[in-house]
Image 1 (cartoon, rainbow, N blue to C red):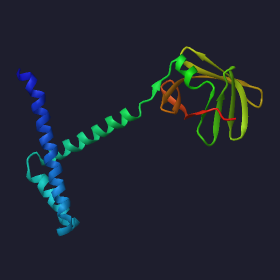
Image 2: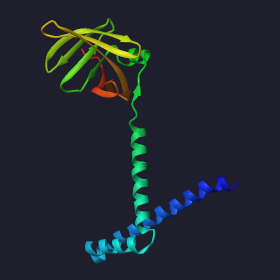
Image 3: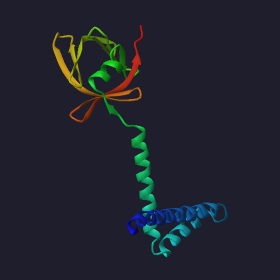
Image 4: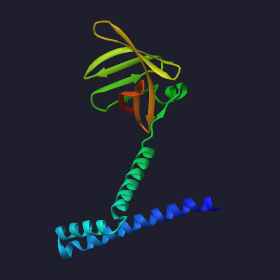
Length: 176
């Protein structure tokens, strides 16, 4: 029973500490018009150092706000790794591009047309396991195969290899 109340007590104490800091800061913002910025900063320093938990409370509220910001930002931009089926459904028949410098046209017949700075490179694509493998032929007729994990969030796409992002862009409809 006592263990059930303890998290609630900690949460309520933390909330009281944060709300007290916010109200103190709001009071000082209101006094800026009357006393000027220098007086406001001196008042903030004196309030923070006069209470035993003033500096610690301020640090806790800053840390809490940073943690909450990081958690919400991470939740908003979570890339998901695509399986072989998802790669086929979301990329094949479409264009992966950065909307300015390069594009990769994935044709359903297995051909790949890559345009980089107005230069066309042709090749093929295939899916091995949960990786997208690209075989491109360069101007010197050298071929190069590269396999990437495909990660996607909304229309944003990333090719990743060994945990690092190799290439990032967007998935667009095929334009002709």
